[in-house]
Length: 99
Image 1 (tube, rainbow, N blue to C red):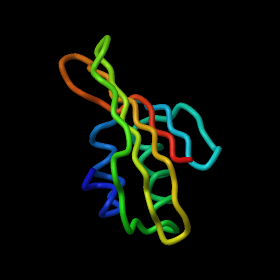
Image 2 (cartoon, rainbow, N blue to C red):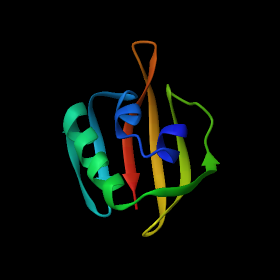
Image 3 (cartoon, one colour):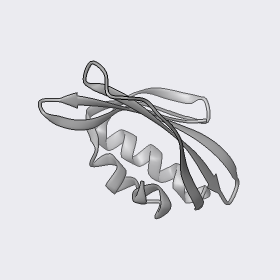
């Protein structure tokens, strides 16, 4: 995901539905698209991405699939779990966890 490489919370939030389940370093909840973008932006302020690579991907079943990334930043390495869902013919991020 290019948006992770460039620390671009706005570009990532373009894939969010109107609400998204977001968890960053054990703080989590169900947020509006705007709130989630702000929280992700705060994360990127103190965690500049140096590398991201896909480590796992599931097949699409029941209109959803998962991708797991390894995100290396200036302050450590994180596992990024992303659940994508097909909603009204559009692929959206339904859940994003940075652990």
